[in-house]
Length: 429
Ligand code: GTR
Image 1 (tube, rainbow, N blue to C red):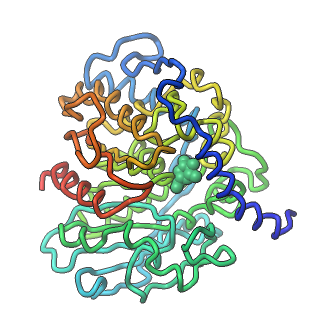
Image 2 (cartoon, rainbow, N blue to C red):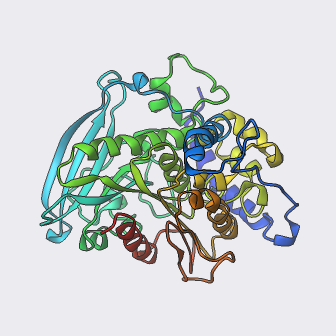
C-alpha cells in the first residue's frame, strides 16, 4: 500500500508541475504543425453523408463509437447498473433568501449498495406555475460549495485540496461553503425561471489516478479484483457523464421540472464531461461547454496550450486507455473535437472560451464549433454565422453559439448571462 504521506505530497506538488507546463507550452499559431482533420461527412466504408437521415442512421453511431473506442471509453449498458432509485433527503422551501425551493435527492443503485450514490441538489424557482426548464451540471465542490446557503450538509466524499477551497485532509470543511457560488449563478437562474440541478463529481468517482478504486467504475466492473483498465473501457469522464444522465433520469420524475427542456453544463474537465454527456444522452436539448479545452472542445491536432501528451500523462484516468497512445501522435486518432460537437446535432451547443485561458486554446475551441457546422447544416440549423473567431465579449451564433469572455479560466456571471437566453431560445421560451 502507498504511504498516505506520499499521496498527499504528490497531490500538493501536482499544481506546481502543471503551472510550469502551462508556462512552457506552445502558444504560437505559427508553430502548429500542419494537420488534416478526420472527415466528418464520410462513413467508414467511404460513403458520403448527404442528409440528416444519413447522419443519424449511419455516421452518428460510427462517430459515437469512435469516441467510445478512442477517447472516453464505452459507458456500460443499463443492465450493468440496474434499477435507479431516488430518495428525497431534504427540502427547503425558502432557499436563496426565499427565491428558491431546494431539494436534495439521493440517486442510488439498489443492485450496488456499496455505492453511496449521488446527492443531487435541485434548486427550483419559487412560485413557478408550470414545470420549468433546468440546467444540469456537475460541480467541483460538494453541494455546500455551490449554494450560498449554509443549512446544507457538508459532503463526506473525497475531495481534492485546492487553493482556497476549504478542503482539509481530502474532506470538506465549513470553509468550503459557498466557494463555488460565483460559478453557479443560482439566483440569476431562478430569476429567469430556470431550475438548476447539480451534483458533486466525487460522489461518482474521486478525481485522482487511482480514484476509480473507490468509485462507481470499480463497483460496476465485472471483475471486483480489477487491476487494469482495458482499451475502450470507460474513464472517469465517462463515469461523471453517466452521473449527469442519472440526474436527467430523476428530472423525468420531478413534477416541477420539464424533463424535455434540459441543458447540460460543465466547466473545464467538467466541460469535457458535459460534452460527452450531451453526445451520448439526447435528452439534453442544449449542451454547454465552458472552457473545456483539451479533451473537450479544443482541437487536439492544433498542439497549442495543453496537448494530448500532457493531459494523458497528468490525468490518464479521465480517458479510456487507448487515448494515451495519441500522445505526440494526434494524427493517428480517428476523431477530433469538431466531431464531438457534431454529436450534439441537431440540438443546440454553446462553446465558451476565455481570452486569458490560453492553456485551453480558445481558438481551437472556436474552430470545433465552426467545423462541426456541416452536420448542423444537414438539419438546417444555423451556426456561428462568422468564420473568424469574434473579439472578446462578442457572442456569435444560433444553434451553435460561441463567446470569448474577457478574463481567466472560470465560469462567471457573464457566462451565465449568455447561457440563460441561449437556453430560453433553444427551448422556445
Ligand atoms: C487542468 C487541465 C485542463 C482542465 C483543468 C480543469 O489542469 O490541464 O484540461 O480540465 O485542469 O479542469 O480545471
